[in-house]
Amino acid sequence: MRLADIIVRPTTAEDWVDVRALRLEMLADTPIAFGDTLESSKLQGEQYWRERGARGTTGTGANLAAIDQAAGDRWVGTMGGYIDRTAGPMLVGVYVSPDYRGTERGVTDALMVGIEEWAREHSSMLTLHVHSQNARAIAAYERRGYVATGRLFPYILNPHQREMEMRKPL
Image (cartoon, rainbow, N blue to C red; front, side, top):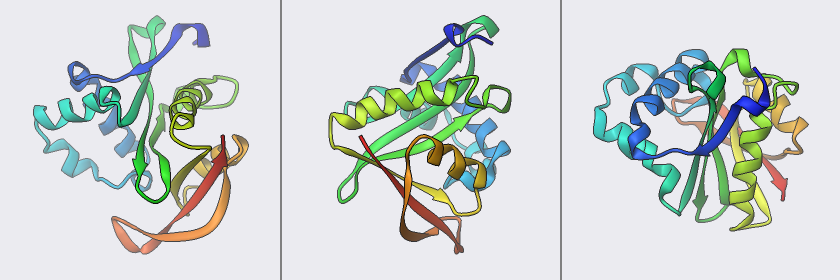
């Protein structure tokens, strides 16, 4: 894999098959990282996946995909963002396939640049919530300048677990 072979672009409704496949991969790989379950996602129909794909073109949010052209246009990562009424831009749905992870690969950074550019249009700060037991994700965010705010929230799938808030000035 060469970073030159990776394109990052907004998702569209027409991407629904790839959006679905990558979402199911993410939920199987890291079940505590997303406010959804693999089982419930498998039950969703085409319209649901088309709406998820269209998030990349709504203008009110962002949804990016990293696609490896050298691997037959394989979808290898995604990140999204939306505007929260109180927190401003929120980073969500962060995932990179295991064999594309790592700072030397650059896929996470390429996606992050796109989301941070989108967020800068709305604020000077980008916020995220990450499961407090997801050490790999926390370390990745810290390497990119995100800092824990000290705020904790119940995890949507298990209120006895916590998500921590992290922020980065843009």
